[in-house]
Amino acid sequence: MNIIIPIKQVPETSNVKMDKETGTMIREGVVSVINPLDLYAIEAGIQLKEQFGGKVTVFTMGPQAATKALKEAIAMGCDEGILISDRKFAGADTWATSYTLSEAIKHIGEYDLVIAGERATDGDTGQVGPGIAAWLDIPLATYVSKIDEVTKDSITVERLVEDGYQILQMPLPALLTVIKEISNPRLPTLRGKKKARVSEVPVMSAEDLKLEESYIGLKGSPTKVVKIGYPKVTRGGKIVKAAGDEGVNEAVEGLIKFLEAKELI
Amino acid sequence: MSYIWTIAEQSKGKLRDVSFELLSRGRKLADKMDTKLCSVLLGNNVTDETLQELIYRGADEVYYIEDARLENFIVETYSKVLSDLIKEYHPHSILAAATSSGRTLMPHVAIHVKTGLTADCTELDIEEGTNNLLQTRPAIGGNIMATIKTPDHRPQMATVRPKSSRPLPLDKSRVGKIIRVALKDELVDSRVKMVGFRKDVEEFVNIEEAEVVVSGGKGMKKQENFVLLRDLAKHFDGVLGASRDAVDRGWLPYPHQVGLSGKTVSPKLYICAGISGSIQHLAGIKTSEYIVAINQDPDANIFQLADFGIVGNLFEVIPKLNARLEAYKKEAK
Image 1 (cartoon, chains in turn red, yellow):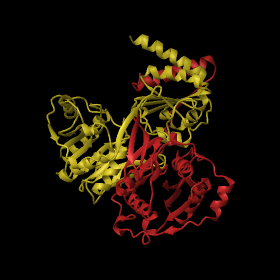
Image 2 (tube, rainbow over the protein chains, first blue to last red):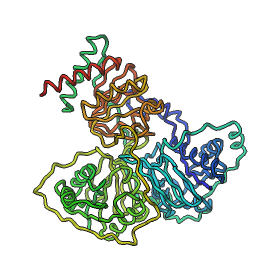
Image 3 (cartoon, helix red, strand yellow):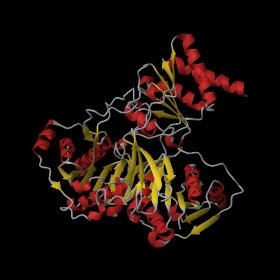
Image 4 (cartoon, rainbow over the protein chains, first blue to last red):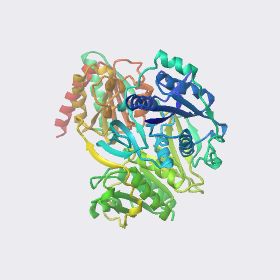
């Protein structure tokens, strides 16, 4: 089973602190990591390979520095990494990005499954996975929480929806976007790290992929960002201390008054 | 034609609330442009009475495509049907819900009709002069707000989160047209089949569509203690949420997880106890209307975002709060 996994490098946010004065995120010293939700896709891909054989190819669109994310994925157990990199890709929205990634997948070659994270934690749109499936015209299942069955030419998966889990069966090749329930990502092994260190990561440009220039980068993007604002996220609400019996009673009373005033009770 | 469309959603023939929320957003835009507001619904066995409610709640026209093959959401077929309608009617803008189906359908359609799509918009407006749809959305965990336009492609498409706007009141004096569109056989994609549906999770809740969410984190200490929050939630007809820590410890299943690797919620009231407020958790609750936090640590991040915060021991505060709410209800009677 040949599996292709598109990943993204995003700013690491788990240890980020808030600036109490401005109420915004402190971004200095923030390092880049594999999008945390892509780790579930990588793990799911490696598990399928372990079960059915084949190859897992991981790739990303980004600057040269994104090679680091690909090497991390190889250290976890992916077989190959490919970097799609070109200045012309700058400013791509989800439409242009999914075009570029779908062409890269065609270029990588024969595959049975594309597995993507549900969304990236920076852009937070979740649009690229479904977009790639539309470009490739292959069946799509989003929010996949479990793979029930894989046969030579089909896959059965469960997807989390508002009121339960929808169970879908589809022919291969197909594209899945996966959520946290699908897998528990492994840590890279020492052997994996050694392999990653010596792995060559080929780089492909727009020209290598023979891309339609009017479909890539900022020029190929239907959406344009016209304004960026940095909202103050702090609310400056009322904070009360509940110490001792009396204090707890007062705090509860205060909360009741608040709920009353806002017509929440 | 330069109409505004909303994509209504149904489940087993019943409309989901978000269909009406989209109409209240769409109504403002249509009025500003002095154009019509249309609601599009794909489904099966939806009664005229149900369709009529879309008109009572803001729509001027309803396009209803009915077929047994549209009963369940299968993105390939839905995408072909919607793309075909767009090519025939040329709407100005389309608003859809940021639900499991809307978030799957719209990016698929965007590729087919070659236009832009903006996810999870919190504000929508019409630009004077150009009639461009101004779409404002949070990104990078809510730390930036980006305003986005689709200047050269039509339709302009956006998704908005459930519960981020209120439906318009039912106005039975409103009149409108219900247009039934036949499903063309060639648009049915039969590659993907729904072979089952599982709802065996205990307390399956849809936290994204709840008016009130009561969440617990690491500070709840053990699973049994969630009974406190369950009681609290009952006073508001709310549902239980959880931080990533609580879900990773197995105290509540994943569908309850709030935050960047779980669900983003926009309830009217979000109450959290024993949650310190990681950036990821805050990103998932920022669009809540009111936030109440109970935590022992006065320096916890969560208090930055709280409208009302109680610094104290939740095991002392919540039982008293529950008792007080019980008494309050009796007084009110």
